[in-house]
Image 1 (cartoon, rainbow, N blue to C red):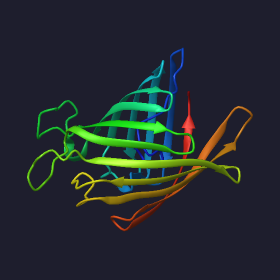
Image 2: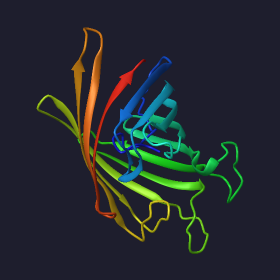
Image 3: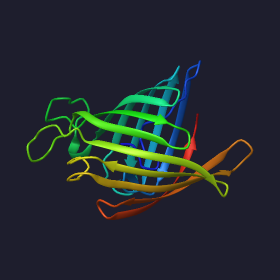
Length: 229
């Protein structure tokens, strides 16, 4: 899943380029918070992506470091970007309860597939995500829930830090998000600052306040990013 500090967890934005580009990085976070929901404790979250001509394939993962009961997660994202528009598909999977990765049978798979569309307007970006296949059903009738999430994000610069303000909501009932209807689930404010270590190496540090009005929870996440490529 895509961490709230990133907003779309595993959805990395790769601008159109004429040559193949590869990116490798990892975040170390004090809590794994995704779209306003607590999914784990101290976690290492690597990401590897390859992009060409606006087309991007990314792998994102999370492994708990402080609690052996935190599930491991691997998400794969295929996306295309042109101008400010991005569209794509994400395959979410975790090993909770010993789930097998290569199991895609209906009612047995722990994969969940999500389609998304987003647009960067400059001062603000908007995104919509909907689960269309995999493990996303309503508990009361067993029908597909089409769990969805809408988010607005506004980046800005203040006091030598890069900031990002986010508002996210679940539009209708979803057992996946544990909501009974329209719910505001993610209000967050994140600050990032690059700490210069050497002339050629800097360490991005970030802190993020996250509130989930629907569940009445509040979080403070701290972390840093290591970039290899």
